[in-house]
Image (cartoon, rainbow, N blue to C red; front, side, top):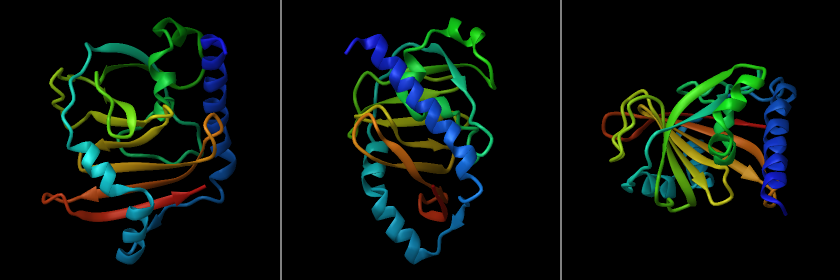
Length: 198
């Protein structure tokens, strides 16, 4: 399949995915997890693998400026004002900045650095926000975003929080079905967790 056609199809599927949350929001609510439920959720979301992936050091490209789109009303609010255009790495890095001016809706431009190496999930890592360092140093206001091999987001880190995404479906037909948010204390132990299912 032609790359341009594939990219358009992929982008359309992401936009449809994001728009669908306005209908799901009435049914979906955050649930604070007690320890037993949290332990099950950590296993379900593969948190042990997320921890391992997050300790790896990466080298990064020069900063590039990319467009981003904020989430539709009805999509759950996530730490760090997470933009829904980053649910997929393709939408974030393959679109030209000039396209931002021709699009409606909330959005803008943001600087990112992309890892030169793949992470243990088979995708890239983005440092999103201001003052990214080529050696992977992250300031507290940045998002550190990890992607799966299929180009969809695995998880991201923001300050003392980790946000994990769970997808279902065959390649090209993935649907986001759940999000887990955990907060870490100064000893890197989990002090709070909540999830939302769609």
